Length: 188
Image (tube, rainbow, N blue to C red; front, side):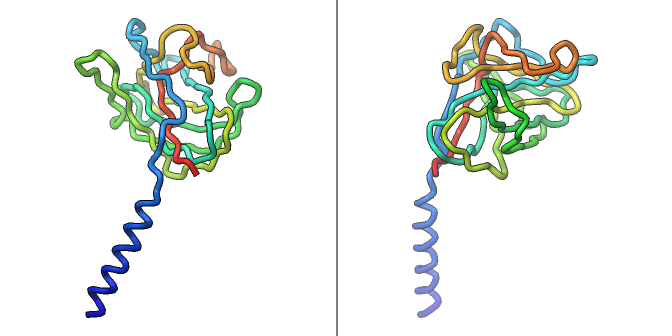
């Protein structure tokens, strides 16, 4: 008689604890895509190593659980996404969270409606962040991917996209468009 009662007590307590977990919510997004570009190379092309950044606004304190990006990887071994502070209006060098994902799982596809699908990069150890401006950096390691950007001009008022290639652009260069993205946060 004691074992079933103990089991029910533990099951009830576990159920209450699970019910109190707040699911991730969209904190920032710009989901429009520019299909006329054919996407932009992310990764190594000759001597250049193209990386992209997007600044965004977090409206509340919480943990950034994952980022969604429209990305297709062909030869890259992995994709790295970093969360950083923003200094001025540009990404800083302070890394708040970092995640490497095998590139083969980031194969976006185009459904019948013509929108490029998004792929998730989930942070295994998300950092607690206060409301404010942040940036995510995306780079391909050991090859290349295609990143589908947002339309030309400023489609996300809460931030700016940047690029760097390590050859002609040695520091972050403001881009004339925003990335297509979604940032999910688990509120605290």
